[in-house]
Length: 260
Image (cartoon, rainbow, N blue to C red):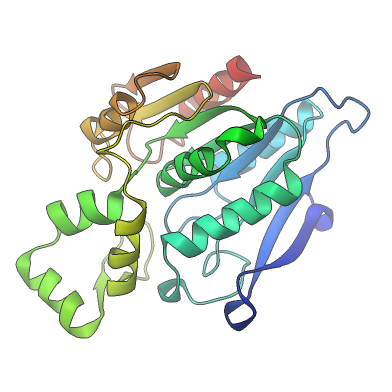
């Protein structure tokens, strides 16, 4: 992959426009029946991550269309991270999907990207373009269920309500995650785990049993919320949250191939 497939599009309202970085490879344009791939990154992750790059390299080897992008406040896209929220990142995901994924597409989402993938599937269920989804440690409703209710102490919740923000130390980065009141309150508009969901396509969930960020029981709740869909739930006994080891990458690509 080179910078030749890097481009920028504008999304959002005129008063809150964001320049979104997109890497789009067209694949074999002569074969309109080929299924393309669409990558959705996790919270504070970007399209240059190990799994995203591996998916793009696989697509190139198979001459498949592949699209990945950075949310606002992430990677090469404009905006400050703490200004963003689920509504913004979903809006951007839909804009990129609608513009670049006109044909049949398998969506691959990691962590928060798994939540956004489900929200995208619900929003575009009638488009007939979704061929399937591979969700890696899907963090559906994480702002409410994993942060606000489980991990945050009374003191942290009080700080967020009083100051509008709290800096959460990160084991993945030297910089802390800034958790804002806006992020928490906006996340409540998109909660899905207590509903019966219909994505209209096969769903594969890959989950590490040793995941400290998204417990496997949380991911299982998403599988249980899809009783009418063809759902495969694969638990990796020694897998962590990232699932970025070579054997994890291989599992992801096998899952994608199965849906293709």
